[in-house]
Image 1 (tube, helix red, strand yellow):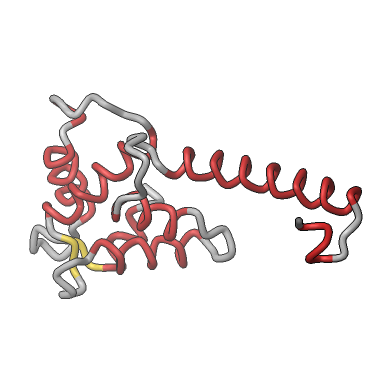
Image 2: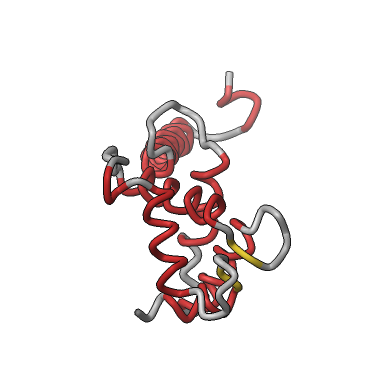
Length: 136
């Protein structure tokens, strides 16, 4: 039917079909890499992490700028402990890290990071503290 409606030769149809199968296989592999918790969906954390970290076109500072803006859900120009803990959890998800106890607890890690990088003493990180803190 495709041959008669498209005027494609058998060779063209087979070539097109082979390309289609290869492309589908690539899409499935890419999806599986992004879907870190393997629930067959791309959740918001997986999408944000991919969008921010997967962008290799800018400098590290530019990518951290994007990460900061994406995780500053309160839109106040600051990352509080909860926002940073969500970022850490997404990073753990992406890395396949299942242990979230003790020193690996995202809220504990967020508190430690804020204590180390918070030069203003407000128990939150502004964008400059967040970006500059990456060099420590």
